[in-house]
Length: 154
Image 1 (tube, rainbow, N blue to C red):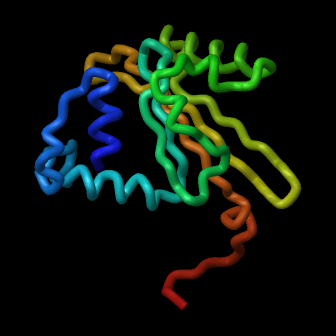
Image 2: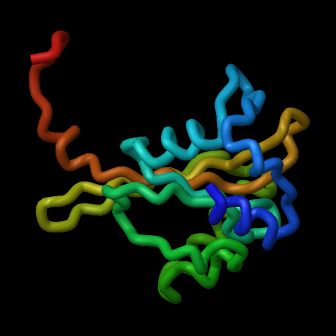
């Protein structure tokens, strides 16, 4: 938690970290910062967030992360986090999201033994203003192999 507080402070966000059990009002409930971080760490989906200024602000750090990230990406321009051959696609997606022309972009990658699903979603506030991009990525190899149904734990 102290690392998170230091990181937030580095980018100008003040926190009340001296109270790790402080309850935060979230959209639909109340959670501590520790609980929020635990939820992110256990999600089966990797999430990254780039703000309206095209700066990487957040990513989940899970054990199963499809493409590793380093703490050094926080605060970096998103175009500097992608291979040169795909930067133009990233910029096009952001521009379409910013203009309102598009709100979602889906991609999938087949690698030997892996099926990776990636979706970018425009993040907008209640007034419809573009506030950034959320990237969600998941290894869906296991999901694609499921057949029939399983309704009970076995």
